[in-house]
Image 1 (cartoon, helix red, strand yellow):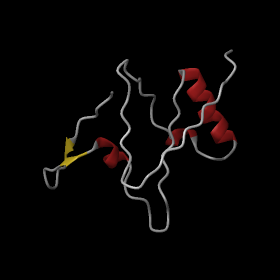
Image 2 (cartoon, rainbow, N blue to C red):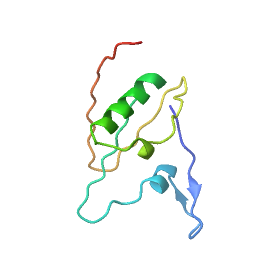
Image 3 (cartoon, one colour):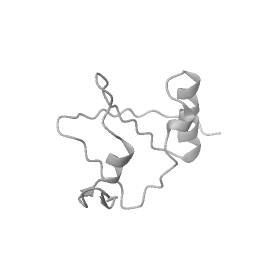
Image 4 (cartoon, rainbow, N blue to C red):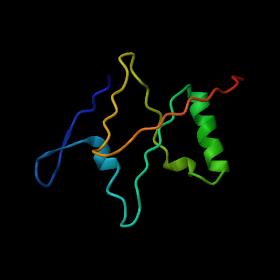
Length: 93
């Protein structure tokens, strides 16, 4: 599993999860939805391009690719969040 280190906040010195720094609270009246695409670099890039072509998400808003270690990755949702998973297959080129 991938455990991300906690970072000390400059203000209080308290530990802050790194993803909290990258994902501030949404504006009033908006819900934060987190999207995750896992697959080969070509498959992920192709999906990001497709979502951009559909005017769903700008390509520049996605993070840089993160290599998943052999030990896996740990997802920690916030209280009350749910998770839905879609598995699709793409023809390799």
